[in-house]
Amino acid sequence: MKKNKKKKVADPIQKKAMLSTFIMLFPSLLITMWISNMTFAFETGIAISSILLFFFQAVLVKNFVDGHYRLKEES
Picture 1 (cartoon, rainbow, N blue to C red):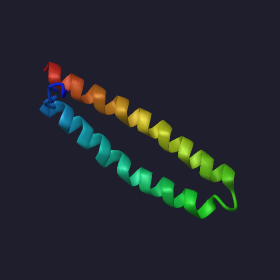
Picture 2: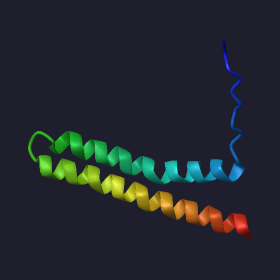
Picture 3: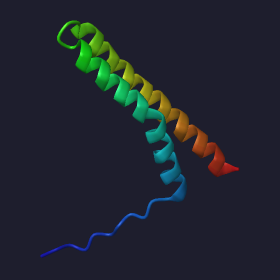
Picture 4: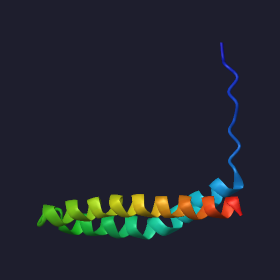
């Protein structure tokens, strides 16, 4: 038996927030992958620190975007 699953309709503000987060983080992801590929064989510390810095930046950007769109939503 199949259960009826309700599809979640994404809020337009959530769509904008996700798109903004993606646009801001995608270049950093590419740079992180590039640096990690180049340096992993020689300097694993640099590769690991670039990956950690990407995740740190992702958290900061996500919090910023959420706060920005939450403020826009209230006004």
